[in-house]
Length: 420
Image: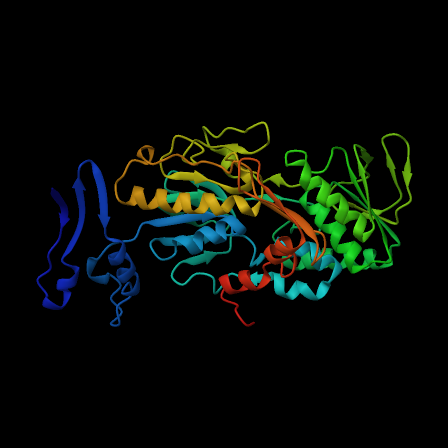
């Protein structure tokens, strides 16, 4: 058995910091420093203003690009053991999961926009846009640069108004949602083009929030064709329950794709849908810049950046990518982070301990990605990642998991806004 990295300090009051060891035994590395990292974090700034923490356990710096679900959740996960810098151009997090219902109920808007200020206990959030990824850091739109030991790209995806902010301006997002609500309030018949998760949930919110309105949901394929047939059956029943007219295998001719517009709308067979309001909900598009500009980065057929089995987009050992913009094998859903974030945290901890990443078990995506599809607050259907094909469940579990609360309270707590 061999001990490496032994350090002694003469001062008696610092005896507790005497030894930081990595023990090698039978080819396995056992890291005995995590508790020291945590205590070093607490003493990072000494009471007398000396910031050298007595030279104890310098924390590796992790730069995370993008403060959406993936970036924000990973930053919180790493905050205790690394020096985390989250770079995000927007001044606040937008809880997109609830943005759909906010179109129907605008009183939710103040609850789904969450400032980043209280999210991290130790790390910091830099409001800027990354314009270039360097070998050991990033260059910012402010003209500044940040140095880091590891860089993780989580730039996410973009969607049509008003499901996600189009730019960096939160006020513009709020205005877009309010305008859509006003148009929705005055419409008698609403056509939604696209029956993925966003279109399905929007149809359910409108049908339950405005039961007097006609709602038509248009899809060029059967709804959720990659999932068990029992999911489609349950959804069709729920659509009937709330009066949603579902048109499958039909294509619509759209005047625009990025925002709602006045109807009517014409289908590919010439049929006219006499809707007052048309809302495109054709899915998310990966945001691949600035990562796409790096030498060695490759684009997959699905428009996402290809990553290796350890979520690295290039041959650089200190650069990672995950979430919607990375071709990990997972679908573009928040559920993907349940697997990706713990994997990345484990990978960085191993690298910090001097372990080669290739010795770790490679990332494995969901066999079937879980999906939760509320049709209003009380109805819906979901697929849980149980068994190879997944377990389809109905109203009660869907409402408890998402439909009733839309996870607003949970995320406000994560952002330090509990009770506010």
